[in-house]
Image 1: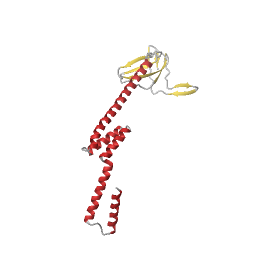
Image 2: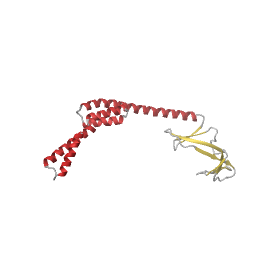
Image 3: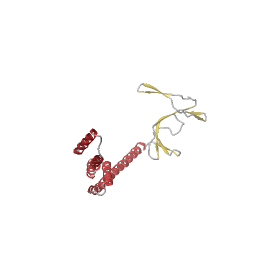
Image 4: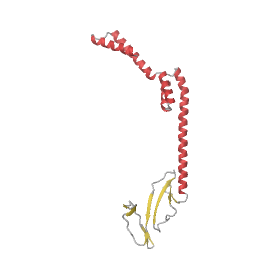
Amino acid sequence: MKSYLIVLLLLLFVSSCSDGPSKSEFEKLKSENQSLKAELEDCKYGAAKLYESANQYFKNKDFPSAKDAVDKLIQKHPSSQEATLAKSLLEKINSEIQRIANEQRLAEEKSKREKELEIARATKNMFKKYNEFTETFWYQDASSPRYVNRNGFFLEFGKSKTGSLTDLYLNIQYYAEDWLFVEFMSFTVDGTPYKYFPSKVERDHDGGKIWE
């Protein structure tokens, strides 16, 4: 490889000192240049090189890269001995890719089952109600009020039919004879005061009683 490059450089140097290469010299340089390109191409994408790369990727458990190298080898050198060997290697590669995919699927299924069991255990003793429009089950503590005819301070969350969970919501309800017209709420947490401005406050009344 180096000798070809040296010859090419010398010829270019000599030709630059003269009036220019003759037609025969130009054709010779062109031929040598094509040979050098072919050598470089073989070094990079030759059958032996591609098979070696595929094997190395396989040993390193980089199966997608191994498959890519095998596909290039079979495409560029379909009748080579390395292509025959590569087809055998491809079976092993595809087997490993399938094995990994199966393991990932089983792990995801196991994780989903464990999550469902965890939710089932956590909500076993909770009050549950179903919203037909959103197809969502809503859960709250068993001690929380079922209706608006009681004062209440409780948390709730929902679970869709696909098993996904909603955010956790804080519900505060006031039931009495006189309106409060709540605009904000004050809390003290560990001695630190907080003000909360709810985005929505529902109000109604019936039979001399009101609720917010």
